[in-house]
Length: 68
Image 1 (cartoon, one colour):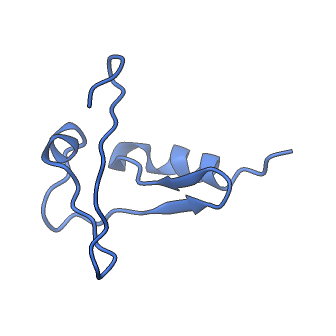
Image 2 (image 1 turned 45 degrees about the vertical axis):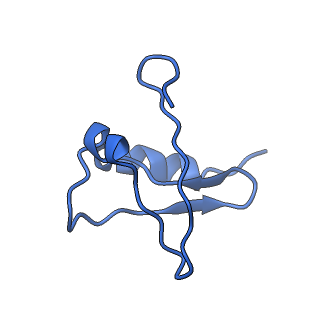
């Protein structure tokens, strides 16, 4: 599913072992290759994020930022 330029949305299905498959287009857009290690951020109020490699520091700061 394509949205505004540079914005994307995809759906994935969680398997019995809790695994998901990252859609091919997402892997291509974010240059995700076999063997890459990804980080998964979770916030009970804002959800789950899997940031692209080049945004890791910024995403970590935002993920752990306290809301007032």
